Amino acid sequence: MNSPVFPILTWHSVNVHSHDYAGNDLLAFELDIDTLNRRGWTITSLEDALDRLARGELQPRTAVLTADDGCLLDWEDFDHPNLGRQGNLQKILADFRARHIASARHRVHLSAFVIASPQARKELDQTDYQGLGLWPDHWWHAANQSGLISIENHSWDHNHGSLARTVQKDNRRGDFRWIASESECRAEIDQASDFIEHQSGRRPRFFAYPYGQSSDYLRDEYLPRFGADIGLRAALSCEPEPVTTSSNPWLLPRFVCGRDWNSPDAFEQLLADLER
Ligand SMILES: [Zn+2]
Image (tube, rainbow, N blue to C red; front, side, top):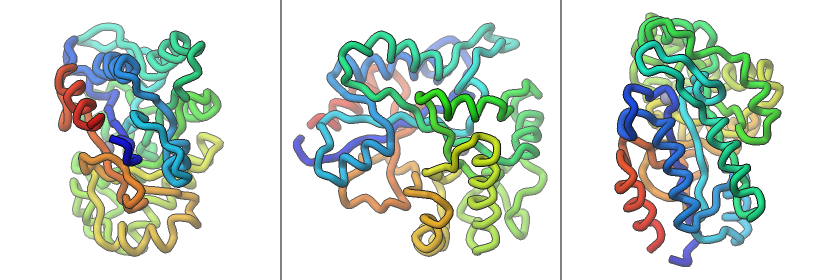
């Protein structure tokens, strides 16, 4: 296939439930980036892939890596109470980069979309993750300094269904399409970018819609009108398609591990379909 397209691929490092691929996104991520390399794909940053696509210089078989929800396993090893010591995405990326540095083929990079609100992260940790302390933000600044991981915006509180209260005006939670007025968008997006910039030293360039969902207002009016002022270049959904020159920058598609592939064979098949 010669038409310029690239897939954005997504993992969730908090998905650690077992020692096998289907139940452990860290294992899946490590195998998947090796599969990309073996099949002749090039890994690069989202910024670089979009620049190359716009200039008509995108190489075939280019892929972009992203991770959602911003848990500690993006960055540090973690002693899981049931599963033992777990690695982290940063270490996997650094090892991969070291193995392939001589070829200069890859610009190894991951965009990590984090939940900004400290209160929301603390509450989610208690309600959904046994109070394991999985959502600190002390690592954000170091991640941005690393050149391997950029901290991006995954909203203020995800309008998450497990929280007692979100910024949604009627406290309707569990679906991001209910963020549909200017004041709610400011609270979910601007406030998150402000906080992330303060904590991490860099203003986010990209926003990932929680649950992949967006209201018509947020996607078609708010972000096209205010996105650049907020510092944003694009927003990411979870439609399982590659990015093309005609993709809406406020609705870039993505493939998600666990939903769009759940085994090494399924990932090979996904890539084979994109290689055609
Ligand atoms: Zn999320």
